[in-house]
Length: 303
Image (cartoon, rainbow, N blue to C red; front, side):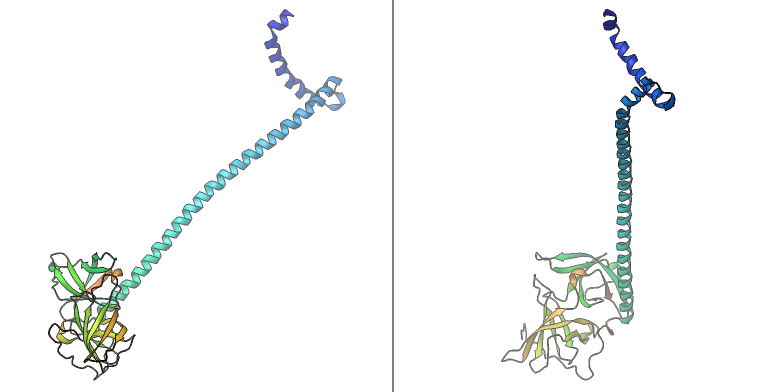
């Protein structure tokens, strides 16, 4: 008894090591030559083998599922990255396509100007508290032989004129500025007036003064430059009539105009230098014989 207590741990370890051997021996022996002990061992080990098999199968399936999920996640990450990369390529190609179309339009515009026209890029914009563009700055200046008063046009029509010139840049006064005045005509009828900007901070608006009350003016009429004074070339598109106010008395009617140029989206423009002020075909021709002389405005005058 003292011997068992003394060597209990060793005996248990030997028994645990020997049991698998006996179980394996019993299961490997030919059933026809198995002894009673072998059959008993096989009967005892059968549930253990079943449990062990089920545990091994479950563990193997779990490992396979985990490995599959890891591979799927890795593949999903790769596909997500590839999808994002392809989407970015599509956006880049679309932007490039828009840029090419815009540059083609600029080339067509330069050919239509029939004179010297220098391209310029908008590098800055003065913004009102209500996010209205008040003045734009171009990357051309005195070093490029730009001078104050030169007209500035875009693909959509007349932008304004150069107001200040510096060595490397120039500021442009827009047609909607309250200091701007342009001699214009209604293309459909040839009626003439003076386009003045309203300088409003909440929108791009201008008005045409000194339109005779007898002249036919309708909402939607296209307005172009007249070319008188040779400050601006003729037939540059300016905008369309948005409202007509005919008073019950006086010589003139007042028309409001919506500019054709989207000043908030200006990117590239042309500055018209020598030769370009005398001819332009941006807005087509004015009907023959329909131009008339605008009466001299009264001093300080309002219609």
